[in-house]
Length: 123
Image (cartoon, rainbow, N blue to C red):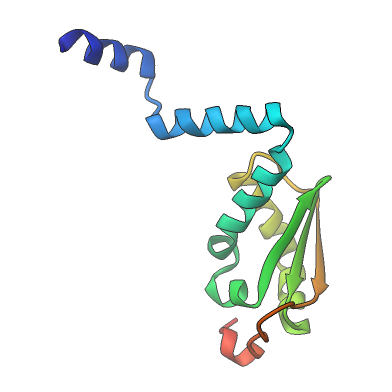
């Protein structure tokens, strides 16, 4: 049992198994041509952590393609807040996703459930 454990430490070079799986999945996504979909999922997963829970309830990531992050806002106040925080949002997405968007496009549109009013969202 000593041999395999010793080999794992030497070949791991400090990276975790999770990192290795993530690298494998990213490579597979690139090979299959679905890398943009992976970036979109990563951006959506990180959204609440980037904009906070209040603004996240009033917005959602629609697409991330061609260097443009498109976000839907439930109402004009949420759209304005997103536009004001544009630079911070783009930088934060770039830190969490393998691609850094150059531009943020905000659209006021909400499909499905009625959005909360600005006073209820807490931003």
